[in-house]
Length: 494
Image 1 (cartoon, rainbow, N blue to C red):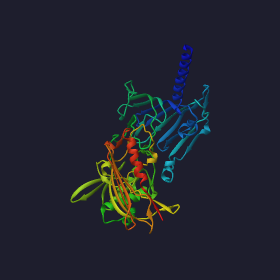
Image 2: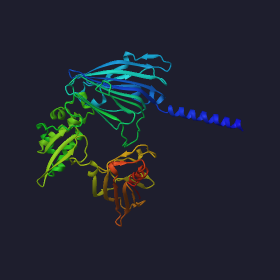
Image 3: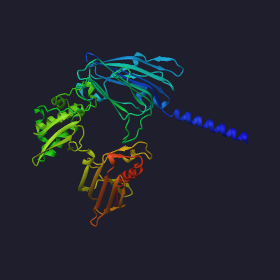
Image 4: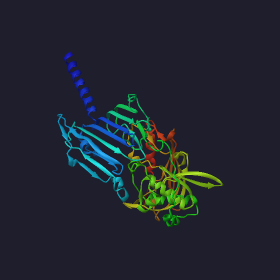
């Protein structure tokens, strides 16, 4: 009996050890080290020395992720000088394989495509070699930045795989201005006083939780080096004259000033190609609205400057900043400030008011039947999605969830009358209505009227605290989103 117990104990011990080993190897890769070292020089130039050491554990890290087998470094030769200090792979047996010269490739960043005036920006691709299980990639490079407007960056410490050590250092010449602000810090984040202007060390960081609509917050450091304005400042710019836009603005005219402003916003969003480039790569300069208009492309800040200028052409009072446009409208002799953006068609909202409180939709209209045959004499039609409506896709909501979910609260009410083909009948009437405490309410009623038309009433109110669905609320919220989407399909039979 004792011998049997010893065998069982031994098997259990081996099982536990193997289980722990399998858990430790479950990650695709692990960063042994990530280091950002910023030096603000006496002449105002900035050196960023970046180093990463990443160990690849599974095949997915080698074949499935471009950021593991390759490294992409964006820089602007007009302001930046890029130097590769070290690049090699340490194989599992300890041997070192140097990255060959032909593995460094300069190309145009995808963000700069379709915009000739940004064709000078480059992306250095480092194709890592000698990749195998348990190899370690080492890359160390320096960007010497000579811009006049400093450097601002937000650095998230966690990555898509664990980080054993993350180090961020700032050194600054005397009388040079710098800022470094840590948010969402954890016990693993230590700010040291050791002779550097700023020194942060974080250890044993878990990987990011990759889930749709995640509200999870991670340790982040915002830095500003020799910046012309504070990290959190909002700097407004008055619009420039833009006679080239007069014809377009005239074509978009509407007697309702709010509609006219929204028309102009929509035109810029649709017709000016967005260059998704961090402003530090262009030394925080914003091209003149005329340049953006004639080139049909621009950064988000440039598109906002163009929108403000076009609104000015229309006679509106508007001024731009990096995140949008401030539009002033006079209503009943009272000036009201509205925020809108040239990078989307989101309706304007009162300045300073939470977006969640603005999304209220009440709509009544008639819809023509727009169904598709699905065989057997049946047709299906999906009720159209209205602009500004809730955009949570239940197909992206996994059954289990580890992180909170972020959304915009809403109060949506729709009443549609659908005119189906003569003689058709509604296959499945719908009548659901329920509430979830702390989340909201849902009500859907779909029925066929005596005249043959289909009456659709859909109501959804989501009101979660701070726009966050907690992990405890998640399953009930997911069910509401599934009901909302599933019952948007109408089936008729001939």
